[in-house]
Image 1: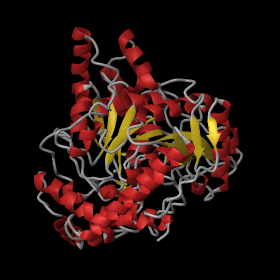
Image 2 (image 1 turned 180 degrees about the horizontal axis):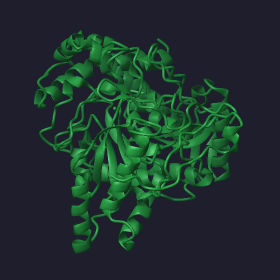
Image 3 (image 1 turned 120 degrees about the vertical axis):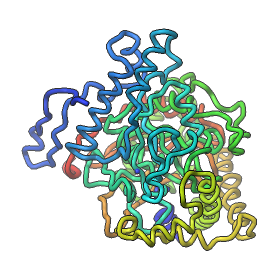
Image 4 (image 1 turned 90 degrees about the vertical axis):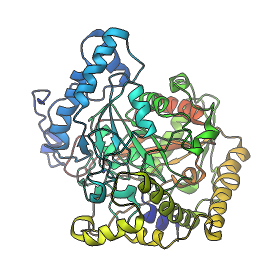
Length: 540
């Protein structure tokens, strides 16, 4: 199969109204361009974590009043108005948690930069509260986790207010070869806030759409291959896919123990860096985090340097270009901006192994999904304890679970043997050799690069429940298979639809990538809030 064929399998991878004036269409819209949905003005639109902290410190806001404003925004935009449909469930205890954090701030001061900050998390992350963890499936729709995922424990310890859970591509887009990103049986279809008839990409679709639409300050997604960076790119966000092992996976519905990771999704590099500091750390129950001991930083803001591109050697992997001429032009503008900021550009620093391990990756994921999901379910409160039982559930509930596409990937995975099977071990060895030693490591060493860049993906495609996704191109696979970090940053727009650029580096190079991404962001400032258009403005 070609690279794009493989990606079709994995898939990039579910109060009172604030404000008083309604937005009316502008002159260009009344002249025949697509109209924007009327949305109430929002006082916290594009507000950063630092600005929220300043407002709480001054007494302008409290954690409760901030949470109330975001809940009102969700009611007005996600469930009404444009109906983005990105939040699958709200936390009924959010306001009580915020009030307790207000009292703590008054009595003892703030715990840190996330104290009182509303966060949305993907609905495949366990929370031991009154919310469910369903992965978007009716099979798990009544399941309450026995304990928090480790990253949820860390968020609570940092003082974050978990506002709710976001919709996702069901089972993190690893159920069907014809799936639609952003759709789950439990949550329905999430829509892209820039153009509501377009896909938000997946599988962290809800987090991407919600944070872009200003439904919370920041959000948490998960990725196996593209599921943080693609929805971040398609929704005009910064997304950090960390090195596998920097962030614990305990308590997260799995696909692959060699590729899975959670990571931040935010409107700015600074906010993503703050959130990464809260998420990162060693977990004794996740062996992948052992090599990360001493590599996690409590505060990644120390790496935010406005002139961080000066003297940096940046490779341009042109063999990821070519799928969209407008995207190529945006990338060239981004490269020129980096050069203008003092970077040394090494052009045509192509990844020699691109596309050579895609089939092996999919084979690895099929083996690991069965083993890892069975292990997760065995410890869960779900009545379904195996992949086989989920396949039976889907067949028995076909009208609810499979109205648009099937479970071909589930069935392929179920047929795989144990993780001791030579076919699995050979595929895994091939993936590691071609993505790491002969891939990213070789590329960085050959050109003495700090990182290489490539387009994260193309502009969002139209939602198509009959035929599935129309993914055109992207660059997430090498870092995903290697388990190495990547950061996507807004780079431009194609007819008003966001496009991101990815910075990819060696294992544990998050500090360097954050430095580069921040400097690029400060030099360009491309991010703009969505307008909730009914359809894309092809005149833009």
